[in-house]
Image 1: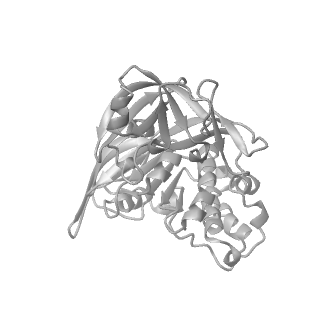
Image 2: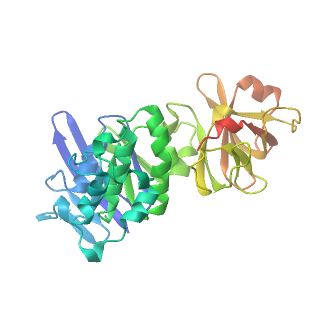
Image 3: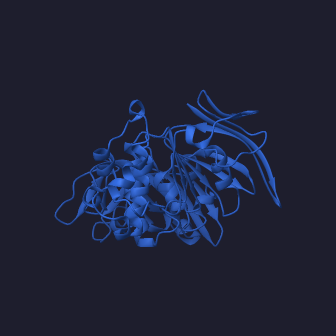
Length: 355
């Protein structure tokens, strides 16, 4: 199934001009700076913005084309914005079931116990919403959208109004939601870490148009990727997360590419993503034994890229085929005589590997 959008809009000095499509599965991130047209495009998809001449198709269903127009309430979408906008006179349960009760019985795919468990809301169901934290309110908003059994979730910067600590708390729930619900999502964000932790593909937007569309792994393979603007290059590794040991660390990934990581106590074992900043990885020609860094992986250098500010980026491949980016100085690269095809040891601090 594919989502297709074609639209042109002139509003003052701003012009939106898009003609695009992407698979309606997994998480598609609309990424770009503020004012580039992300929210306008989302509103056209949702039916909140009626633009003359626009075309919107969701699979075989035509939502807009010529005189044909399907209003937002008929598109069966789950909408979540920066503010949770919960109904203050209802409890958490009342808010969660608000759309559920208005969804025909034949279309209900998710039930309250399932969604409550998915978003960690079981202990909050009887609370009034004014007794919730910002992160809890946003989780309730996500649950309310899910319980409408939508064909698609549209998330407009759902973490933007939250402080840094609350974002860290809610991110695992969003990740779990993306994996467990099976509902395709469109996520608007200008935060690279949200894209790297949640997205399957990225639609890069700029000045009212689409600059590029690619998978997350393709986006991360480019040394000058816009996703690296804030914290520099990084890798996203996918693998199974094991149970916690007595020290609170867990094994991640297959033998040969296995890492020891730290994860919150409430993190479920199983498939997950780990984000590794390239600047948090060091290189050694030999395997050092007496060192506090315990993650030592054999990797093969594919390419060396010169970066601005006197840096070199090593594009390496792990034994399981995944890419690991490493940032070092030109002096280190020269002293170690690093070259494409060379096998080296990548050293990664355990504390750098946070889920």
